[in-house]
Image 1 (cartoon, rainbow, N blue to C red):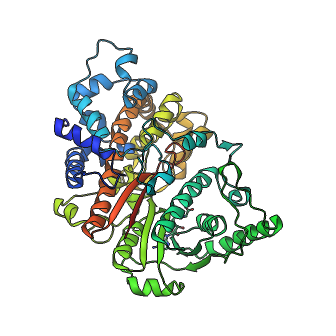
Image 2 (image 1 turned 90 degrees about the horizontal axis):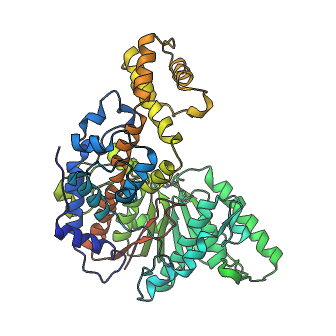
Image 3 (image 1 turned 135 degrees about the horizontal axis):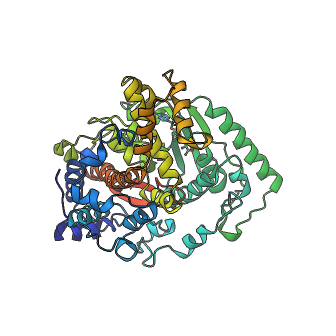
Length: 500
Ligand SMILES: C[S@@+](CC[C@H](N)C(=O)[O-])C[C@H]1O[C@@H](n2cnc3c(N)ncnc32)[C@H](O)[C@@H]1O
C-alpha cells in the first residue's frame, strides 16, 4: 500500500482550487486532474472496498499498521475531531503519535476537495469577487435561518407547494443563477432536462417570466407537472396582478405566462444536437439555455456534448448527482476530456458511488453519538453469518434494501429476521452467537475505516467535475464550478456553468 504526501507544489495548487469559480484564474486544471488521478489510483483498494465486506474481508487489516494502531477503538466523537482537524486539541489518547502518512492522507484529501461554501449568485456576472472573504455573504447568512417549520420561507408559498424544503432551497438558488445567465446571454428560453415534476421550471416560468421547455423521460411526471403549473397559475390569478417583492422572495409574475411545455422523451447519449434543438419547437431565434437539477447517470455528459455541438444552446447550468449511474467508459459518461482519457483512469461503480456521499454529513452522524455507526456495522456482521451458511446469498443481500435495524429490538433479532427474509436457516448456533458478539464489539473500527473511505469522496467528485471542465475548455468554452447550495442541506451542491 502506497501513501502520498502532498508536495509544497501540490499544497500551492490546492489554494488555486479555491478560485475555480473565478474565470480569470490561471489554474492548471490538468495538474489537478493528474493529482486526483494519482491519489485515487493509490487508494483504489480503499475506494473500491464495500463496507459490508468489512468483517468478511478483514478490511481493517488492509490498513497501514500505524494507522490502525492510532485509529483503533476510537469513539465516533474522536473521529469527528479527525475530520474537523481538531484532533490535536481533543485527542484523549495523548500518548498516541499520529503517523505522518495518515496526516498526509488527510491533507491530500482536503487539497483536492472543491470548496463548498455557497456563493452569492448575483456576484457571478459583475466581475466582483465570487466568494465572500468572510465565508457566507449577508444574503447567505440569512439563508441559514430561512427554514422554519419545514418550509423554506424565501420562496413564495405557491412555489413551495408539493416541494420539500431541500428542493425549495435548491430551486430558489438555481433559478436565480439561471435568471442571471439568461440576462447575460440575452436569451429567455430555458430547457430543463430531467425536470422531474417541474418544480424548477415552474419557478422559472412564473417567478422569472422565462419560457421553459422540460424534457423528462418518466411519463408519470408530466401530468403532475401540468397540474401543479395550473395551481400556480390560479394563485397568480387570485392575486390579481399584485407583485410582492418584499423580503427577497421570488416574485409571482403578474404577466400572462405561457405554461411550461412538458415533453416526455428519453435523451439518448448519442442524441443528434440539431434534431434535438428542432424537437423543442422554440421561437424564431431558437436560442436556449440548458439546465438540469440533479441530473443523474449519463444525463450531464449527454447535455455537455449537446451544448458544445449545438449552436443554439447559449449557456448551460447543471448540478449532478448519482455519479455511479454514469456509463464509466469513454465518450459516454466518464471520461469526457481528451486530457483525462489519456490518463486512462479506471473509475469503478464503488468509487463513483463514493462521490455521492458527504463527509460533512458523516461527521454530523458521528457527532450525534454511537447509534448510526453501530447500526451500519451490523449489516457487515450479518454478512459474515450469511457467508457461513451460503456465500452465494451475499449477492442476494446486496440487492435487498438495508432494513432499518431500529425496528428490531437487538442485534440477534435483526440477524434472525434478515436470515428468514433471505430464506436461510435462521437458527443461530453458539458459534454464530460468539461471532456476532466478537465482531459487533469492533463497530468503532468499522466507523474509522468508513471515515477514511468517505474522505476520498470529494476527491472523486473533483476528478469527475474537472474532467467535465476540461472537456468544455478543450472546446474553447468558458466555465465555472460554483458551490450553489448549502452543503448541509444539499450535499451535491456544485453547479457547472458554461457559456458561449
Ligand atoms: C434525480 S431526478 C431530478 C428531477 C428534478 N430535476 C428535480 O430536481 O426534482 C433525475 C430525473 O432525470 C430523468 N432522466 C434521467 N435520464 C434521462 C434522460 N436520458 N432523458 C430524460 N430524462 C432523464 C429521470 O427520469 C428523473 O426524473
